[in-house]
Image: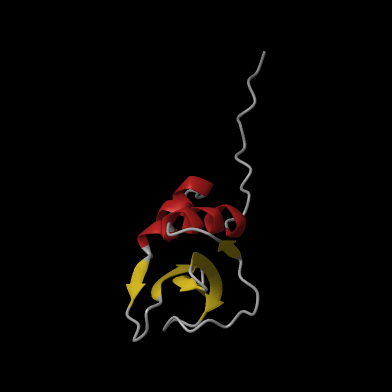
Amino acid sequence: MAKQTTPQTREDLKDNIRKSLREIPTTTRVLAWGFQIEKQNYVILKFVSMGINQVEIYESTRAGRRTGDKPIVALKPSKDHLLAFEEALEILTPQIVEEVPETEE
């Protein structure tokens, strides 16, 4: 008998993505975290440029090397990588419309 799966809500999907967040070691002053949505990897970069704290999120390889040219989220001035992560979740997770059961009158 096949196992039935219930459709995920958007919040369930976000929780699973939050669990995939991991720190990526770097050899520079840049701090990095990676996360995965389905098969696509993303990297959160926290750095200082010209004296301004910045956080940016890009598409990346599994190892954390960015592959995208334009950031998905760019916050400046900011030191909060989790705020950028939550903004990216809002942009990258699909809008799942939950069906409300109809009531019979």
